[in-house]
Image (cartoon, rainbow, N blue to C red; front, side, top):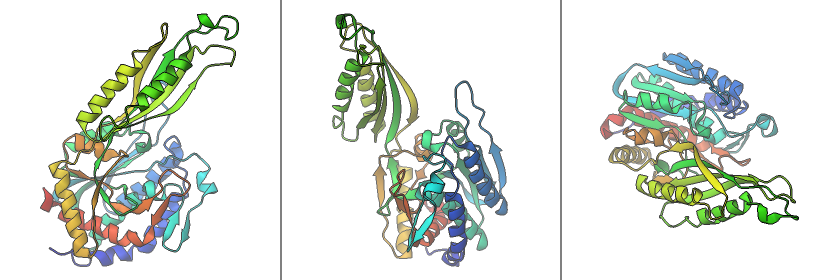
Length: 388
């Protein structure tokens, strides 16, 4: 097989527009809890999908209880032939309002920088421009394009909608950018975030400390015990990333709170690790101290299923036809591909341009990778039937 005639030229012809679109999106502050900014990105995504002839649905987030307001979910449906494809990208970043002004979009040689340039405005645009290039050569795949407003906080609003769409599709392609070394992603660790609340008893630390039950002391013991789990199972990583508690130095701490990040590559290791975390947390060693464990976010592992492997092999073969090597990887970060894979849908991720240093002030996108990687994505969309 060879690339569809004219495809790479159609992608290359859109390169300047891609750069203009990228500059526009990177200039928007769109952290997960900045819904006005996320909705500006949603406006741009919706306009691009409408231009392609898609039927576009915008689903507003309706917060309940103490939930914070999030941006809209965008779902664009393109009628066409072949397998039914679910393309997923996210519109939110991890950055606070004002970051786009502090670190504006810049291009130096073949490197673009700015908040969200790689994670994942570059990937989101690759999906839209790949579809536009296919349309330019009269290819009409059957695609549902999902633009997620809350992926960076675990997709709590989007996940039920994505799960509902899984049953209607044959393959999921997730548009996170390729790893810094160019790898695509066929497997990801599962992630669970937990909040630990430890309750002790306050007392005067100088006059009658024996009456106190220090929640901080118990928290310190638990952090050490939890971190000792790293390495017990080959793929497990666990981090206590937040600890806060107490009121004054002369008061035995009555309360302390931890936030934990637990990750593993397989469902079996994940279940074993979570069981041990629960055992450590819910069995305090200090008399008179209690502790509760609450799960605040969850992504199941994206295991390398046979379906995922077939799509990865097809992508690698297409890259070979284009003249470059491509490799697949397991990565520790989660994405919406965890959800689609766990729901039984063959999935592949890391299909955007090459980028790196995500979530940092040094985030970058390799502009020389935009045309080849967008062409690869478009060809994969066009030929995905070969893998199912």
